[in-house]
Length: 326
Ligand code: AVI
Image 1 (cartoon, protein in one colour):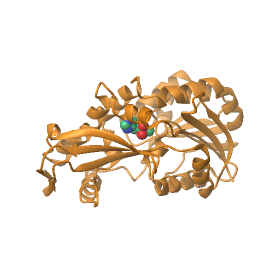
Image 2 (image 1 turned 120 degrees about the horizontal axis):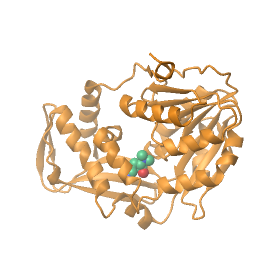
Image 3 (image 1 turned 180 degrees about the vertical axis):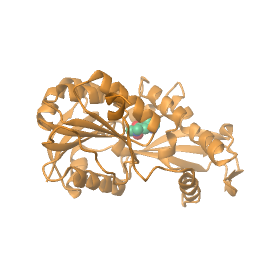
Image 4 (image 1 turned 90 degrees about the vertical axis):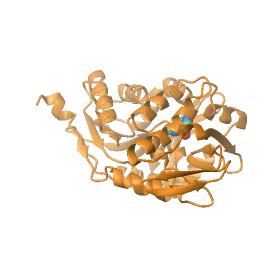
């Protein structure tokens, strides 16, 4: 094995999701009341991830390009805030351009830990990053980042650990789950450690709803792919034509809810269990919370983080926050 390949051999956490775990999660969520649900994390099989990449390019889906523009405009200030000899820990290895830009700008980075549940996706991202930035030690970890995982040590001395969590993925968690995740990050970096995190901001509901109900139907295909995956992996019989994609914005709670609406009364079988759906009944597949800057900082304060800087775009549609473990 070459030195480069050894460097990219990932650490595997014991918490890899198995098919049995998926079966339990799906059955539990489908039985939920008052509204049936399907677990958001299963949207991302290979096809789901490819569809999500297409969503990021859609004219209506502003978050990806807005966050990238904020990074481009302020990456030097972000790098100064992160400081020298930092070990960057990226939660989810989906944002190669943003991560590369940050690392390029950092002074003497100690290394970059990439954490992702999908081994193939992770290894591809890690190999690309290691190729682009040969001076940075890249340490891939296969893990479900919603549970604690061990952070590998790089060869270089680490001055501080900084979690990087771009993409506004924090918005896909309910506030109490988000707080737990932020607490886990705080414990992982220790006192004086940092967090650089992207959040989508509250705005005109029409803009938000258009972003999640795109004209080309890519988000609809992404949503319905979850049924296709469950059919294939759990032996279910969802008929994709019998469901309609819809995303609605709840202004009071500040969140998009992504739904699959049953077009008719129907029975579906999932892993040997029967579920009866009424005509018009929704199954919720995702929340996407939109924050105000102050609202997000309150959430962070409850998890032990103190804000140090915030960067937004000129429309104030998206924010990147730098926080310090208090
Ligand atoms: C990954 N996450 C931040 C996306 C979002 O905007 O909540 C997932 C997504 N769902 C539909 N479109 C995009």
